[in-house]
Image 1: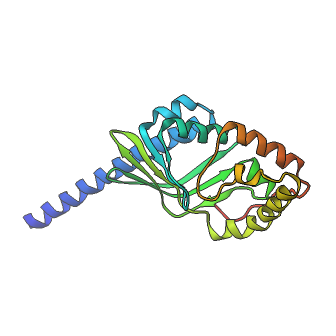
Image 2 (image 1 turned 180 degrees about the vertical axis):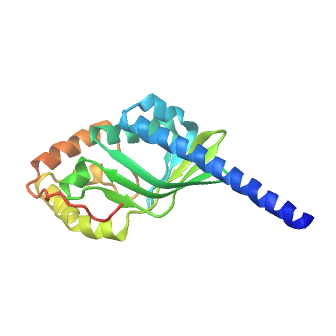
Image 3 (image 1 turned 120 degrees about the vertical axis):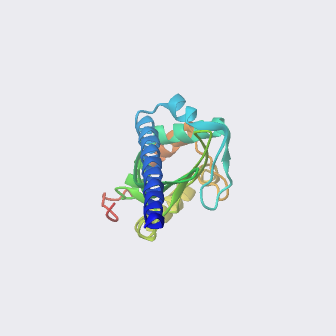
Length: 202
């Protein structure tokens, strides 16, 4: 009986710790999303370590706060909005089950939100975000968006030769406010904008 009671108490303790960790993770993610929505660059950077890395699938890592600042400023110009769902913490890692991103680029492709899942990870060190590993886009998002994306690139190559490597390099991420402004001007000029539609439930 005593062993059973001890085991039950241990299980309750582990459950309590896990629940508390998830609450802390949810609070951190809520703050991240709120600062992003408010275009609070300094607040966002303060959540990251000085040497923080951001690793998109198939791209070279974005390293350091200065590079992150460029990425966030690109988001702000593109009117990016984020939704994050399914927050859990395991040790120093926060896992996000699903992220929906809306911005001017995806809207031009006809997407009312691009979905990343499963398992975006934020790795913490000393309470700060030391690394971010976004999940890939879902197959449904890619299937819905790629035809318009390819059409846009073909139009870009025809009307503005030489700009594609500047805006869409293959192995690195070159996101900053200047490139975002150029892209927005091109999207306004592009005659192939799609009607907006929801790709998949969030």
